[in-house]
Image 1 (cartoon, helix red, strand yellow):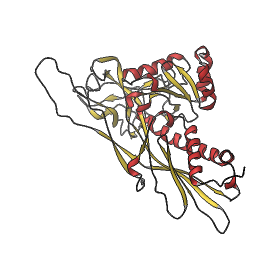
Image 2 (image 1 turned 90 degrees about the vertical axis):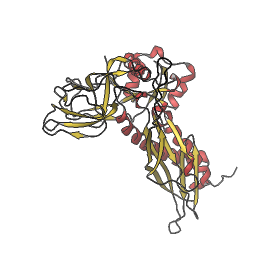
Image 3 (image 1 turned 180 degrees about the horizontal axis):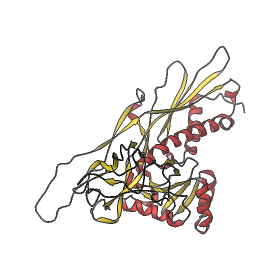
Image 4 (image 1 turned 90 degrees about the horizontal axis):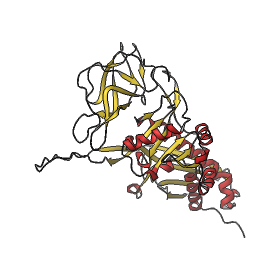
Length: 405
């Protein structure tokens, strides 16, 4: 049967299918296609509001004590375009769909997927304040995985069907070898080869990627920093006792002596200290610095996050303290997370007129393909574009994982 000229719609749909298959982390998080841009097309910098869940207190007895509802929202900016460009000649456009995909779409979409995955992962992990392990090395024991899943349960992450573990190939190989009796159900063996999915164990779906991000600790001295001020609350923390010009990096995780985590609903104190993440780079001046942090220090009410406010002269202990993870050193950030801890939103780019173009949506991902004709060189210049934004919406439903034992 004669080949049919590949149309922009056919190419776009096939490219979307390939792109979807190549995504690992993005495929396992909340994906939203924003149809509000469908009529006119989105622009870089467009913003969306995402409502945060409301929180309430429970009274005891008959006397009503109603509080005003103060809804909070997060702003997600659709601010990144990634694209791949190429040139075809007319002969190449007469290939079968499968041949065209193998020669052009698969390598192009693999590169695009790699860029998107890396971009999202290297940003969202810095929002996660839960951390298990010392940060000094790769997780190797099944206990490391179980501890990570415990953190998700303590944060009240829902159903285990949507809990995931993302690790690099080295950790996956070591973990699977050490625990091979747990892998695999026969139905999952094929997916291990085709989808980077290695089965389910410890309450998590195990995924492998080469895009596990790396975090470089600040140069901070982990032995002397203290809080500097009584009854500190909120999203900033005044500190002193660092080295004179110590740096504290966005993504550094620490605890405060005497400030314990609480159950998200009952507000009963857990037995472990609350972990905080630094949300902006900072540099000490004469050892003093104010850190921007999450979660906020809130010691009462419906939005309580900790057992007590930060008292004066309380020790800050950073993950990888005491020499187990050196300052100014990079460590991989493997992740355990619920699907809804993170979201990725794609929006429609405008489809230009007077050229061959197509815009399609598949599983929450919108991809635009535009093809023109270069009359001088008898070529078909073409481009694939995806416009997206991402956000950490429930950081308590994610955990960074390193070696524990």
